Image (cartoon, rainbow, N blue to C red; front, side, top):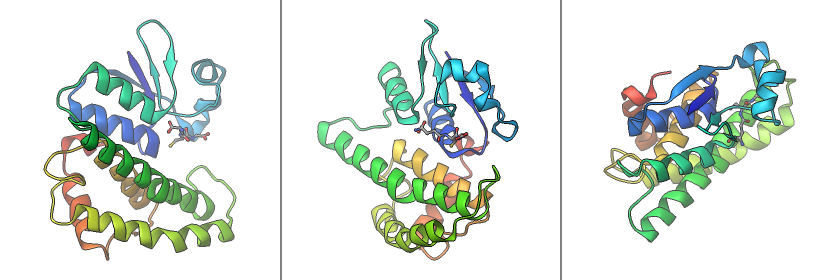
Length: 200
Ligand SMILES: N[C@@H](CCC(=O)N[C@@H](CS)C(=O)NCC(=O)O)C(=O)O
């Protein structure tokens, strides 16, 4: 298998953090978003939507959604478990992951790309303001969820940590300070950022 990625882009970061937490060996190939390589003919053959990450399978087929890639790898490599070991644990992890993706990660991406886009997208203050108004509630809920635990869902890392890390890391890179006033969240981020899996 091969993972096509760009360091610092949030969706590839989510998958790469997961792969590193699991200790899975997968060849990684950089596709340079800053030079529009994700829109090259070679990459569009892998993923017609022209985005990253992409996982190339051993039979030459591709998976092109970050969460699908994670779920696929989790089935191939169940240990260490990062989604949960009972139906209710898995439901809780998946629910928290979806909420953090929609309520934090996607909002951060929209704010960054409408205010200070590293890809040069045009500014759109109305979209940025709307997202900025909604972000505090999601951050407060996540702060409460983490509470005093080392990881978002408790004592062990899960896919929720990977999604949250990709959001906060991208925010920090793009100079968007969002978590300082949320004490549990800020502590979690500073601690998770030190892990080998969190290095770009
Ligand atoms: N639904 C996709 C979204 C992938 C996505 O939007 N990736 C971004 C990087 S975080 C990208 O490739 N952007 C380049 C572009 O849109 O041209 C997933 O979760 O894998």
